[in-house]
Length: 185
Image 1 (cartoon, helix red, strand yellow):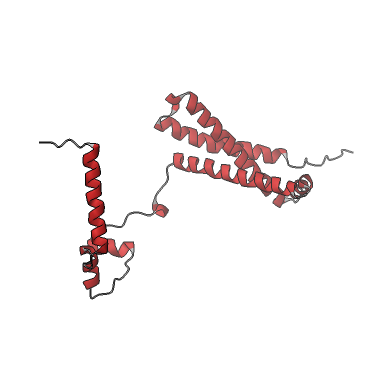
Image 2 (tube, helix red, strand yellow):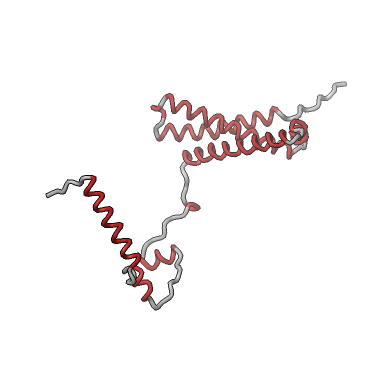
């Protein structure tokens, strides 16, 4: 026979549990779990996770360092990281402008520093292109959910890495100084 629980019945059970907990809290007798701990003659030793699993004869779970992330996960993580980097970079540039720094002059000076300048251009071009293309990919998936299938998603992730590499290389190459013209005699 099933008991139908009414709100009054639930309230009575709740009050009974609360009263029992209050009685135990004010009782001079320790709770059973506390009594076992208090009677233990051996001091509690902290064991590592690996030691506990070895004592039980259980295998240790694999760690992230040996887990091979699928390309889709790496692509998603990279989109998030580039978004954070772009936010931090824009905040830094805006903060510099707010305190009166000549941001265009700093960017020009940094861009003219040879190899360091090209590295700086790459560190801006890659997050911009990758995050932009990742946003385009998600816009396509939002409007055409039939493309969200395992094979297509993996191909889109590889295309995202490749497309952003090409765009980044093109942006960095476009900023290179032109070769000096050789005069013919």
